[in-house]
Image (cartoon, rainbow, N blue to C red; front, side):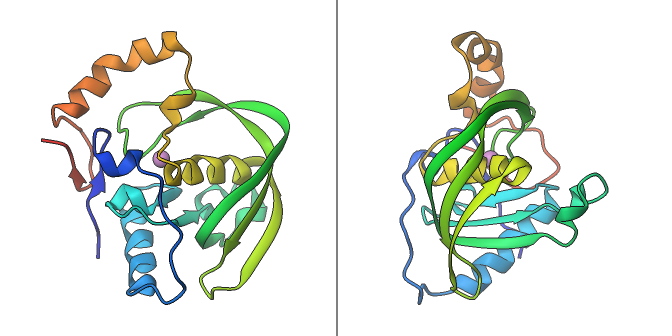
Length: 184
Ligand code: NI
């Protein structure tokens, strides 16, 4: 089932999401719905707060990048209760967008390497060092679980430049091809 994507202004996007118990009701269905919602919106990642739930569940699909990055062929994973334990490596700048911030694309500086822990879809625990593009996508998505969005990383000047677009979203104007839930 395709769920509406919550747009900037919705308070759930600013909440710190909670770890879920492994017997969280409807977890499998939530993950299935999140994948479907992300696919429909042409996203590479989606965090549960973006569908209105303040819980630590994220889906990531990097298969679309596999032409340029063969290592991502078939990469489609769910992350349950993820936590970034440490960031390290070089700081790299790259343009980002977000399904909760339609029409905004800005350059964000992030660490190239992270140490993460999470459960996979089978509830198997993982403790990994992740580098490169996946590390970036994870940091973007896991930020959502801390109530953060990529615009929080921008300079005051860049924030000023996108203020009009953000205010429009607060007034319920979001131009997208997917189903959304705005404040008004
Ligand atoms: Ni996002």
